[in-house]
Amino acid sequence: MLSTEMFVNCRFLAKDITGVQRYSLEITRELKSQYPSITCLAPDQILHPDLADELDVNVIGSHTGHLWEQLDLPAYLHKKGSPVLLNMGNSAPMYYGNSLVVIHDLAYERYPDSFSLQYRLLYRFMVPRLLRSARAIVTVSEFSKAELIERFQLCSDDIFVVHNAARGEFRNVGALPAERFILAVSSINRQKNFHSLIQAFNRLKSAEVKLYIVGGFNRIFADPVLMAEVDGNPDIVFKGRVSDDELISLYSNALCFVFPSFYEGFGIPPIEAQSCGCPVIASNAASLPEICSDSVLYCDPYSVDDIAGKIHMLLDQKQLREELVRKGFVNSRRFSWNRSAQKMYAIARILIDAKTEPLHS
Image: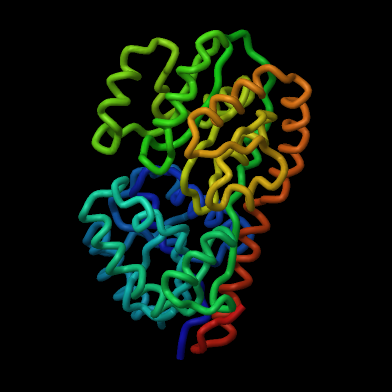
């Protein structure tokens, strides 16, 4: 007989907290605060001991990384009566049947150059098996749901959508005396389209603004020609990873936030920017029109001229900026970690009550 307990795969605590890991962390936080009996499991190589303490994580097993996830985690759960396991970070034990699995997007297939060969091979092997073995499949947008259906011939009723959100701490902290700047936040990977953003920015020389880029930076996946151009431009500033307080201050004081990505399963940064009262320019591609609705100024990510034109338009038109700030606040409130956690719990709860049957929405 299957256990009626609920467990969370917290291997995300062994990684940097970026988009996918942020989703896992925030939903787990909400679940633990509302349902303390939920058990969190992680390997010993935790990078965030403060978060592990907050979530009351149980450290199990002797392996690390995927070996821990594929060997130690399912072995431990089988001894516990094979309870429902929530896996919210694009991976899970492939041969543990009582799982809820979240697949955020198919970036490893759509933009393979942004990932190592080892990563691509692993996920091309793992994801189809996870989708076959999981009792419930979750993704983060209708866009990603449609991609999963098309790529793996899944039924629409078999996939649930549970959104990302911005945390409550993301709110406007007021103006600070600082230079005028445009803000971009993301990793510097090909699908994020920073090469077009930088080229567009270089056409705004008369605007007397700087471009701040926040996020992890890996030159392995960056365009070397573009990097040579950037390295000699004092108006383009790579901030690297920053604290939440620093990020909130940057959102609150930027003239605008630009997100020209070719591909996003959801796209948390525009929602964070809107929560802080920053007007947003966003790509009209992938999930972004679904997530941002009419609350942003859209640009064509394939046109440097259009990106530059939209930035210039927003810098020039105060009334437009104010309108996008108002609409942005409204849009950001559509998304809540609390509501997303409640939906995730409801799906998992039905799995427990259904015992052995796959779940259909």
